[in-house]
Amino acid sequence: MTDVLLEVRGLHRSFGGVKALAGCTLDVIEGKINGLIGPNGSGKTTMFNIITGYERCDEGDVLYRGSSIRNRTPEAIFALGIGRTFQLTRIFGRLSVLDNMLVATQRNEVWLRSMLRPTGSASERAHAMELLDFVGLARLSGELAGSLSYGQRKLLELAYVLVADPQLILLDEPAGGVNPSLINQLSGKIAELNQQGTTFLVIEHNMEFVMGLCHAVTVMSYGCVIAAGTPEVVRADPKVLDAYLGGTEEDEDES
Image 1 (cartoon, one colour):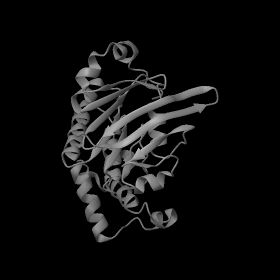
Image 2 (cartoon, rainbow, N blue to C red):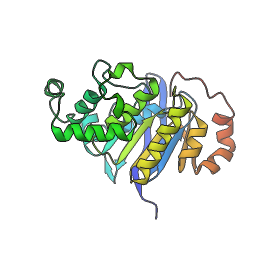
Image 3 (cartoon, rainbow, N blue to C red):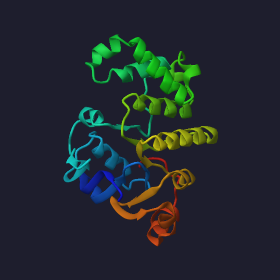
Image 4 (tube, helix red, strand yellow):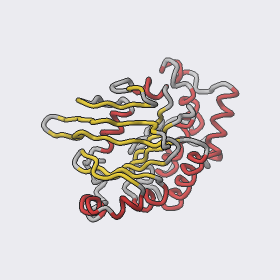
């Protein structure tokens, strides 16, 4: 029997007269890498923002392990074991790579206190270095985060999220703007974490990345889910070919 970790049920969200989500429903299967694809403007990032508390829905519900998390704060959702990255990385460019990680270890503290105590305890520093080593950034721990390449920033953001040992990680375009060698590295780390039990929901425009990495794929178009299944099933679905795979994939403005 397949266990569903996260359930999205009938989500609606409008911005003025524009309906970003129109009754979206999807299941995130526990222990799997789940993909979320669709044309730009189809509502994928809006769904991510609602799941993680950065936006509120108008109707519908989000269930995590069977309990509603609808309209909770990002901090409350993070504390449940749900982490996320963003389409545009959110790191502290003027802090070192290691200090970015140490700020992450103190996310449950008062924000000002965490910024005033970036040195961390010995155990926090050791854990941070372990995670940086895992993503291949340990050698750059003393460099300013702002000096990293875009792909390295993506890896740092993943390491940042891993500090809290989340059970579910939402990745918003992890391969976007990343060179092929780092895409392979990132893909390998996601697969390794998944083998260790972490569940993923991944937004991505890179079809090779999605189809080669994900166990299940959900497709959105115009705020609705139009298909779901294995990569092979989704790839052959005429609705998907018409709405996404047969259209223009390279418009990078909005997900």
